Length: 376
Image: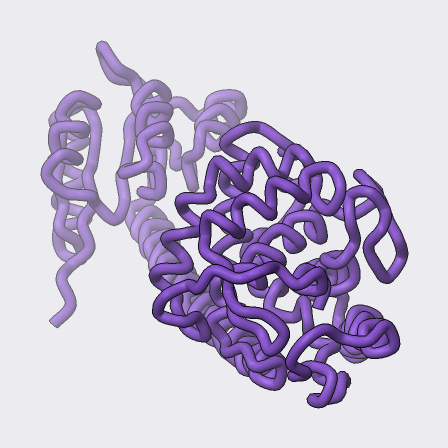
């Protein structure tokens, strides 16, 4: 059996309280109180389904009481009906403007008041049910959206891993470069460097989009990707085409879907992470701030990981050697400001390498840097 709905009846006239309780008690749990102060004492014990509120009361009148009710989150949604001897239009309008759902003038018809109470309680129940369903729907949508995003990220991660696998590198490279980017971005915000650019990004999309930075390699011959030793100039030119191939692939995805921040970031990162600060990079020969910040950040993450990784054409370098070479690229390969940030998070980079060792040798061997390490 459902519990009866609770109504608090507020009136400083004891006769009105008695009449009101007798009228309502057959249908509802009624709590008669003689003042606004007693009303708020009741509210500390329970939240009613409805409040019937007199206006003309000593100390705190009905207008002040409803102001307090509506300004208190716990009570703000409790429906209030004014039941009062003030029957002028101005008083009624004031009461409604303060948040009352109805205004009943005394003397009133008992059946009419009961019907109004019944109607407003039904509306309140419907409002609560609508909110419950809406909250449930929002929660379901949120869960489903997150499931879709997780699925998309998983598929993209597998695609990226397959690309890297063809290049004799496992998915550890994908995971590490994403982690490096996260460290760099967090430090940029902390140091208030390039803040406006970073705040314009949706980092939740930017970081996963970095998985596609080398997606164009899927079209490059295994003979070139896995060639031991130095590439010929012709082979190097061929491998450089993975950038434009990757951008073209992402643009084809864009043509078949709605515009999305994920794809914007992916295209920028894929297309510009081989550009160099001094303009000697590829494919466009961009320089300085003309290189999008996403590409400049990815260049640091990608080159660092290439340096500490074993590739067909080179042994891995130690972390200290990699840091030295990154510094040597200041102002030529890399944005000087970002190299400063890199050095501040280099310890975090080393921790990422230690945690995500997939594709890395157990002991980093010292080796001479091949001049193509930073490009392929």
